[in-house]
Length: 350
Ligand SMILES: Nc1ncnc2c1ncn2[C@@H]1O[C@H](COP(=O)(O)OP(=O)(O)O)[C@@H](O)[C@H]1O
Ligand SMILES: [Mg+2]
Image 1: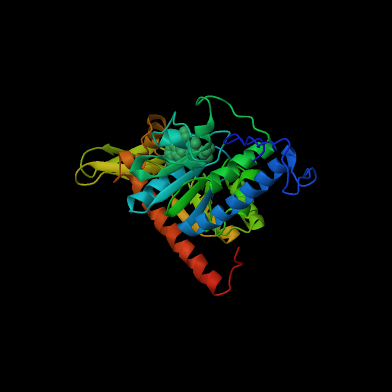
Image 2: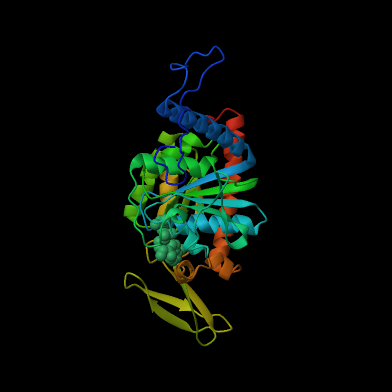
């Protein structure tokens, strides 16, 4: 692949003075170095296409994770879904193709890992819960190097990440993208066969929701089914203790007074909708796509991202892990429903 950051071909130059059996010089039949390079490229493209087809069969489910806007927790959700699926005993791969902010490896304790290439094949790193990870970050000189790649190089790298990676047999491949309707999802949608669909991540605020409406339109234009919308950072629960049955008041995010009564043991808790609430569901209803569930605002998620231990691994019985598990169930159900309606002719098969 021309300009590929992963492999470089050194074309063999034609041997000088090669002759055919009749003793005549084969000037016209001998390809030039340039022609040979083109042939090698065409061959490797064809081989990659076949490998991708084969890989399409070896990977049972492929899920794209997108958002219209950055910072809504797309990478956190992609990583959480991968871990949650792996927790259930699935073999899972996670492909992070966000060149501008590839932070998936850090979330899985794989910061600093570099790409492992052997015999022209790329081997994924293995993160927590056995999740196989390939990330654009593995190509960087250092974790803080900003990457400015020209479009064709970027797309070439993505195709190699799809076609040249030894994923082995996978139950699920989760793919994390940069925000917005960039070239990356288009390249993946065009290269990878049988994508189950797209999970759209949003936060509850109005601006993020507008963006997720655009993402639904984008999925339609890619002819990738929408699996559904996840509302992230939806409500922050605080806990406290008081006297048994005592009523206490808490000042809410918009200065409203919330009264809560403690239970017999004196425990109380209240969920504050710091970024409003329910917007993801409203958008899903408006756009007629499934709502997959809410993930709470959880400061442990931020710490986990920095420490390299995802919240799901650090606290497998915690509120976030439970919310992720329920979203995974909703995704699996939706994938099945989409397949059923495809086989009954309800959806276009891509
Ligand atoms: N549910 C959550 N609770 C608290 N912080 C979160 C949550 N989801 C994501 N974050 C934090 O928000 C920031 C952006 O998340 P990230 O997954 O990198 O977003 P994106 O991939 O959409 O740019 C990170 O610091 C992350 O730890
Ligand atoms: Mg991200």
